[in-house]
Image 1 (cartoon, protein in one colour):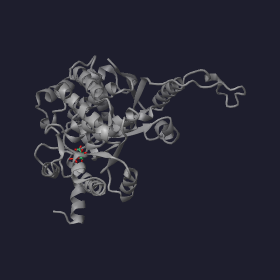
Image 2: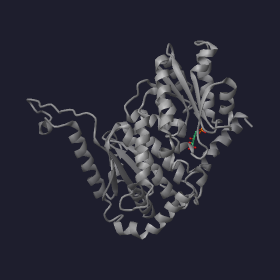
Image 3: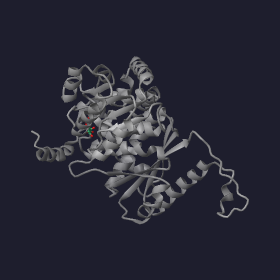
Amino acid sequence: MSIYLDRDHLKGFVEQKDIEKISKHIEKAHQDLESKAGAGAEYTGWCDLPSRVEDSFIAELEQLGRDVRNDSDCIVSIGIGGSYLGIRAVEEFLRGTELPIFYAGLNMSADYHHNLLKKLEGRKPTVVVISKSGTTTEPAIAFRIIKNFLKDKFSEAELKSRVICVTDQSKGALRKVADQNGYRSYVIPDDVGGRFSVLTPVGLVPLALAGADIRGLIEGARAGEKIYSQFNLDENISYLYAATRYLLYKKGKVIEVTASFYDNLFYVLEWWKQLYGESEAKDGKGIFPSSLILSTDLHSMGQLMQDGVRNVFETFVDIKQPDHTLEIPMEDEDLDGFNIVAGKDLDYVNTQAHIATASAHFDGKVPNMTISLCKGDAYHLGQLFYFYERAVAISGYLLGVNPFNQPGVEAYKKKMFALLGKA
Ligand code: PA5
């Protein structure tokens, strides 16, 4: 196993016997998911997606990536929500890719896109437009703007070769745009919803073009699929995580703060927030997902975590073996008093900060757990993606909601379209 779950700081809140008491419910949720008898079963194609992704498809994308990188110096990824966050999560977790990725269509700010166009000046981008529905306002408008910007810079034929669409097989405006203009396109499977789609062409295409390790990502997710699709409450830590948070919720802990002492997890946690917020929060139920990056947020949110309303639980995400070590230097005059750690690795101090924070927050009545990844590479991230996906499906079923729809997201769109005069 390369991901671990530490549940030491749950004593008095959730004990093993509490998990055993609901084991029948967890088993039912598991069976409903496996047999496709549960709510939203038509969107559970992500369950066996890692093992269904063909190695030949990975090789095809790796080759496409090499070809694109020969003739492009950046990738522009246009998309929002599930068609954006997973890509950025991988890129930032890996601390960058061979080609930089610029993001468009994640908002409708003129200033943001103006600055983006300035950054693209003089560059040779390959543009990936991603939209499952093919009708989302933000990426559709951003695509217009980017196309318009590039049309003076490249011939029609070259512009065409620089655009790749990732969308539905037959539905939506983006499918029409791709087919009518002859853009290269990749299909998002019907049975995988936006927030579960990072391991489909949604994530794999832009990441492969940028040179990220998509093979490692898929191999990690395959390992996750093997472990986390088993109903075995001694070993399946994804189910234990789901059950624990459900029990905490039942005790009034309605906010989950996922916190990490590793800054490269910032967008992984943004991805996690979408996955959990959109999947669980409906019918007046659900845990509010929130995130912190530490130490920095300890100096802004630490007071709230230690002493605020006690409706919060915390899940740390840790990387056991970071890529680098950095020795803390000795100083002759020791004015700051930190020669006590001179000669030690900086991450040693980071680890002590984690241990101290988890203990202090527990003392402050914030139950907490820690998910530890052995390493911060694509393999472990792929496994973590699957861990989280599987857990949210189970916890959604435990809550009695359909974890695979998002009816609430439509409300603002209807009002916005009315204001814009769009039918
Ligand atoms: O989870 C979801 O379905 C949404 O957040 C979508 O990912 C987001 O709205 C983008 O949708 P689309 O890919 O259809 O443009």
